[in-house]
View (cartoon, helix red, strand yellow):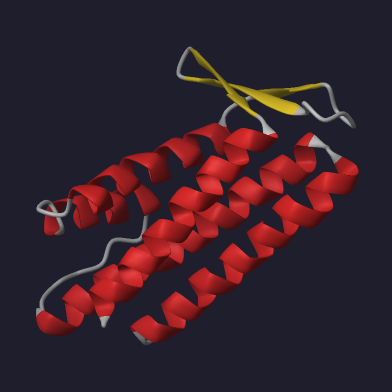
Length: 151
């Protein structure tokens, strides 16, 4: 797959997350929608990471792209160690994956302050609507950065 396909997929996932955030969550206010938004953001980041790795692979023919998301993010951190934004986003990406995979509980469903409470490695993480907006903005900024990087 060409790196532009990865970028298109990343933008499409971001668009889906945006719809879930601004439309679906507004009317349903459930933790299931919060989890769907986080999944879409992770998928968008996955495609952004693949686009970055594909760019490097085309330049260096010998690069092997790992299969697991954690290994991919570590490789991106290594290859783009000079770009602090990309390094920070890889940490954020792994954090999102941890939040999604952790055991969670629901609080104030069907209300304005619907919250997904996750236990990530002994730390309690609360994901609210405002938190999701911050996550969305971070991922959107990262995809724009990737687009500049691969051109």
